[in-house]
Image (cartoon, rainbow, N blue to C red; front, side):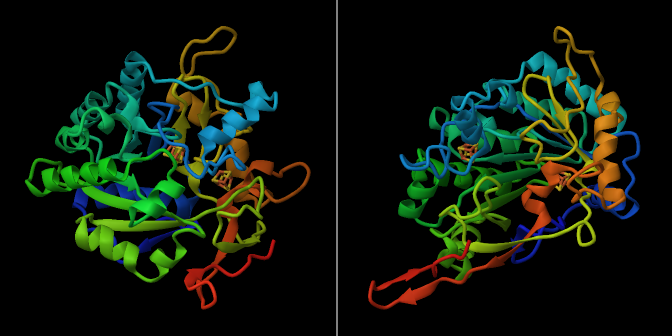
Length: 379
Ligand code: SF4
Ligand code: SF4
């Protein structure tokens, strides 16, 4: 799976077909050989950069813990050129990119980067188009609300269209915690989305490799539910998802942020080499930016646009994959220089969550308050 120390699987991984396992072997080979070949194994196509939720936001903390809203916050500070614009991927651009992916041998597609992909009005046909091109893996992270607010059958339709990895970001196993963490979300809509996807797959209407996951960002609000097993019991036992993953909540901009439920230790280059730049790539919704990992929010490592924009060359995905910027990042990990302050160093990696190791903080029972709380965090 991933060696990202912030990510773990609760319980076991689901079984998969030999075809799927073969692509995962190539995914692992890229890491072991530090070999980028001439194409990525996986491409994130950002179908939308908009969202109907505002996770973790409050009046005191307007940007919450979401990259979309963090960018909105940065924009209000006058750094417009360092943020993405918000929007929806043009279906013509999508068609062009997905065909290129098929032509160059990409195995896995994810239909989101930031944002809620079910809000794209063409999302079901996007999945059908990808399935028609035969990718072993077609993935999506979703908040389970989005387009399902208007179309309760949307996630069932996605399963029927051929999605293989449908990952619901749930974060809670009760409505109260859910509404506090996934601000603006509707618990009942989420439950209906998961239920309808699980039922459709169980009825044999999905792809053979279709698996449904519940994902949780572990925070001070839900740590007890994760650690006690209640989260797993609800989503796997009661709702019937195939598997569960947990990510620790991390904030590059403020490690004292109140959401986290772990202490963080920075690794150096002798302890960590990142594999993403050898195997995955991101294309933003407007086709104006490409990145060799999923943490490139600040656009420090841009392979350039893959559509014609004034003043910028039109590149193919394969050409973006071979750009000097992408190679620079690969080299910084191959040569173990990414942690240097000067030449050879990569500030984006130094502030990235995956170069840090979390130590989970266990919730304790506060007898005077009569509830389970997290001890006060240090730094
Ligand atoms: S659902 Fe995702 S994109 Fe939307 S606010 Fe939450 S973290 Fe951000
Ligand atoms: S920013 Fe650096 S460490 Fe983080 S995912 Fe990208 S390449 Fe890896």
